[in-house]
Length: 555
Image (cartoon, rainbow, N blue to C red; front, side):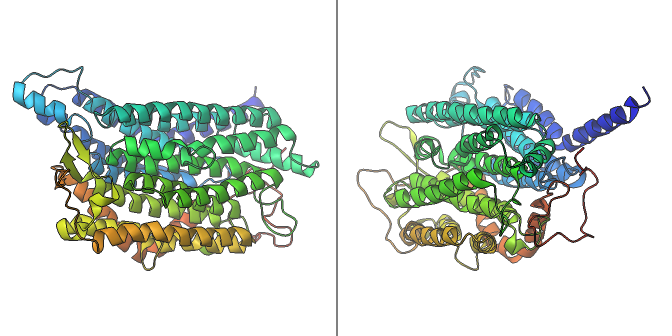
């Protein structure tokens, strides 16, 4: 009994730490419950409190995460706090962007007739699903177990299927929701199957335990086939979340079928969750098994290499052929996933403990997630701010490239938001996108991935065409005057314009304070190798480097 006491106490302490780590998600869950009740009220002022309350919940969750999130028991122990604060920060901008997405016509009918039908109201469900999805994103960033990781990923994704379907009243939104759901189910089945193989090959579900077992397999002659198959299947399945080849087919149709504000949400939240998950899964295999440099083990590196090349190439080439701004941004989103996979392949640097920002591929990915989220929300906010009445009386948002011609002249604020956002996505200095893309190049060069760097540079040059085309249309082209279409007007929801302005300001201001953000991402991207392993045989980590107390030598 006395011998069992220490392990019992240790388990209790570990469980207590997990409860403390989930306080941000618990706070967000309580907010979600309140939002669901308020959204069903018969009083319009009460129903209108859903969005502001969601924003308050995100602020509270972000502050709690920054103050209380401990390191997790996984190879990337410090990523949890960064991921949760990032989710709360971008989520606040998305709250502004999503205003008026649902119940617009319904609220007009209620104002006219005075009769409230709770069955027709969608506000409660929409904002509750919004918060549930962001809760899943936070849980993904802090996951230390395959079971928790699976549940967190699905909590992130499942609400978005419904949100897409109800984001507009048109049939194409329901079609987009159905496509998104079925391909999402395929992706979930694939990475869950991969998780099952990982468990079968290692005997563990805890990420730190899996890492130790993989290290033991390497010492015994190599990672066994079952574990490697599980890692590959898990990565390919998670590719659905980040819209990477071969799980990218849904992206342009879903973005175009949903509202612009919802497309902006999809461009960041599932992608961020997917990259958190990929980094956690890949870190279990480690970047320390190369003979001459730090790299991922055999097949896993090859699969990620092929996916990265195909993803950035397919995304950029197909974006050149589009006449819909939403589809251009959708293929752009695919290409950016390919860029970030380069950082995953490069890994955490030679010493395995963070190192310099310019050599840490994981820090580069985390910084790029922030940069991409800020920039892409701005581009979609512009589309969400422009609308017209179609011939059937439905409200249509701007989408065709002709809709943004001369935008700097007709709607100067929106025009410049679009120009700043797309130029930032291109990566021109001195904007935020440049400082986000540069460490992807330098970390890949440091890791010796020169062919991958060349392909990344070629794809960045291809992307310049369609990004500069969008900037040209807004700034230089004369406004579109078509007698067959009603003129575009600004949306009555001013918070969408606020979201665009916050994004444009962030593209400029965050570039100025990029040094502090880089330091934060280096800490968040700190990789803890299994005990007894250095990241590269001829360059051992410093003896006095700090090691978390929870890293225990394998028995």
